[in-house]
Length: 385
Image (cartoon, rainbow, N blue to C red; front, side, top):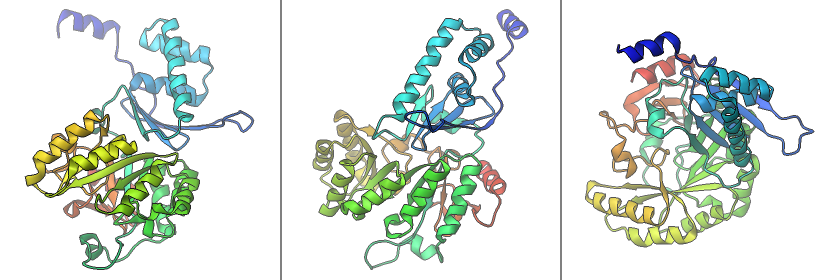
């Protein structure tokens, strides 16, 4: 330890994080523009703020402390005094920062069609390296059903039974109780389950952010889409089949609605990927996920990513779309086991029978069952994997 380190450790002890846990606030009904906040604080002081069960803000320690006082409704003068003393920051500057945080939150609460995840002082890589108390997301494969007949999928062969509506609600409650704020419903094709609107409504009721992975064909029907939106669906991931015009029609229907949309595109050997990317940009798609069917298409995958970036699209890679190591951004974020860095940390995957995996398709990494095993045993196995 050098001289300056010794002085700093003697007189300026590290700032101890606030108590870890989950904190809630519901604005009173008489207040115009009522809203609710859920704050999850980690042991290291970082946090996750959930706004009206539709947007999540990942927070560094300082931002989490401001939000802690907002959620706890600490009188503003007292909050500024505490933060100023703890961080040795000029009180005037603390007031400016506090107002900035409140303005950001108000803006996110009142902004339609917004990305479900916002990062304040964080990037995704930082999140995946942290020792968090629970995943940030649970990917729920509601069904192994797919459209039409033909050969059964691997998921359909493996899963012998599907959970009932009440059993899925039990899993969602269990997830919320341990602090998992985000659920994505996937499948094979989750819109084939008649209880999907009810399950989406249940996530909204308890406070979770909900997303949907779908081929979009069911959403061609405006009434079907409206039933999901009315129940509180927050975002969609359309797994687009460029050769299927109804898939494009479903995408157009969703884009016209008040909901955030991501498109996943799998490039094949004969894909006219440039035309497809151009068409997506013309429709106004601004968030894209790209993967390839084989290594032979890797160069086309990289070129498609560059074209998408030129068109102003944001590339994402950690959604439960058909996962492949030939996923454009994921090629930079895959560990030695071939898993994306967030698997088993930032998210877990639940099969239609309740079995939990580190990630979609990783059957060798079964962690237990959400109905029959305790959460503590599942999470312990996930962290040890």
